[in-house]
Image 1: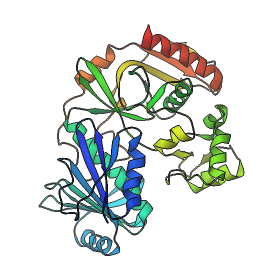
Image 2: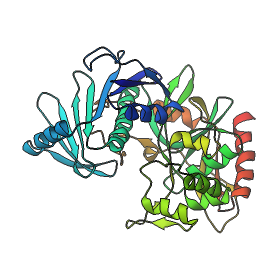
Image 3: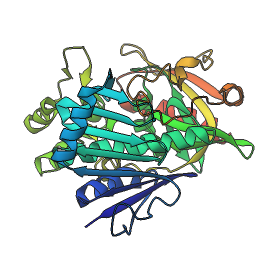
Image 4: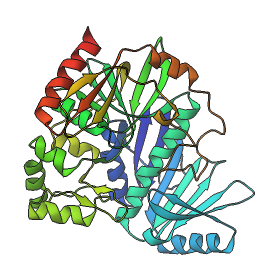
Length: 378
């Protein structure tokens, strides 16, 4: 029996359909806190009308279809790319249809742009569910980009509909800022990326739903490590992108940072809804950009404001040139998007502050709360 989840974000829509209810429920869980995701009645067959004018994503466990697409990709010329940290082989046909496989994950994809339909098949339910939610987000992304949105590399918290956007490279303190302010009663809209476009005289901000990675040190300093560990010991399942070494450390009660061979810290990975159920955050579905923050972390300094916040640059916008994790392998984004010049110019008019954060979470939280209150409401 078919089940379906429909996902809305502004004017963008995608419907996920599967014969495996766990797959559509995964999408409902993943997007429900930030976008509008609802269970909908599925038609008697996959050929029935269900997409409601939006994109259609069909996902299931299907060994035969998986083998067929693996053969197709192997027989045709194909490119090799890294997509979501997985080796991915992509074959593009002259009629516009795109096939792709991820051999290690036993996943296969078939995208028909004329029908705006994406099929995902795999050998096991969980990888298919993860891929279905990831690609549903990509289908939404393509529609939002066509509707004039841009993607910015920022975390975002909200109070009374007013959004504070925090910018900086990896390690600058975007997640730290968002978590500390969420602990102070702000709503979390995003921990790493946001959609934004000029609208009705302001700047509308929408979430980019994703799993959130939060390090042991930050969790411990905010007294959230033990609640997380208790939930894990009681059987709570974290997002499957979490490395087994992190799970083992939680079971052992260790807070020592774990690093992979490339020097990247491995962190607990939270489903969006676990940000609420475990960490006590409230999620925001949209807001108006009101102020900007530019932190940097210096462990041996004192938390303090510093002069001369920088201007936004190309590195603060996700484009085809700067996207490093989710390249547009199915060509879902428009060939050309409007320049972000107008958006950047409007952001440049917003109040902003730069500050130094340290590993003293309490002192940082006090500085952030005072600074952000002034930025958003004075």
